[in-house]
Length: 305
Image: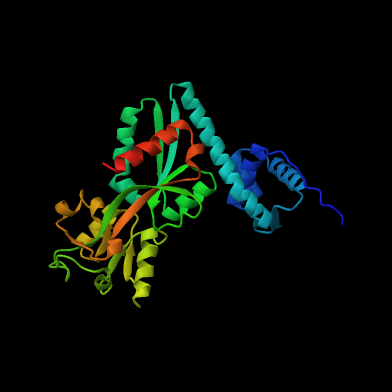
């Protein structure tokens, strides 16, 4: 049997950046203008990439270009590589001016709104010289980026499929029904989720873990969630409920800054799952840099207080 010789090629960050630009612009001339380089130079670099890898990366057509399946794979990896290189350059620059550690964390909207910023602030007060960057992401994306090693630490609802990641317990919250004072449920002291399905609701982002979870629960009862409006923030949901355009399922802990001043009614959900648990996710705790392990340890200790 004839053996297949694997091609080995050196990663060229300039070529990767230009390839990403071409894919995003879907046009070599537009990518050349964006990157301030001659179109012929980009074409040469793409041709060199295709020769080195041994397969076409772009489909050329009248309207421009589009990536082949191999090109799609390269585009995904190139974005991760370039993002990590940029982060490495930024972090190393900070070490030169006195920063002694850099932590990057992705967190779900509930964690960002309810408790994580206060915990980060308390941690930084104890560890001078360490910097923490936090980005809000939906839970599924948090898991994926950790698996792809695009970030090291995530905080999300434990409903997310964390698969082979290491997870540690963090904090919890309680889901409630938020309604206008004139809403039919406003006089209730508690309510089940199934009872709320009779009314128009203000939903979170369509791709959010909360939206997916509530839709699945409704389907199990043979009903559906009537989401007339989707919003990206809890504050926006509160303001829409205030306009009496629907009710919303929101964590009680996220409502403290809004419900009193807006005159809204919080009704606890009676369902056992309304008590949500959040977890800290990572690929390998032992492989984390020391500042990141200190941060994870702090979050675990703080969650017990």
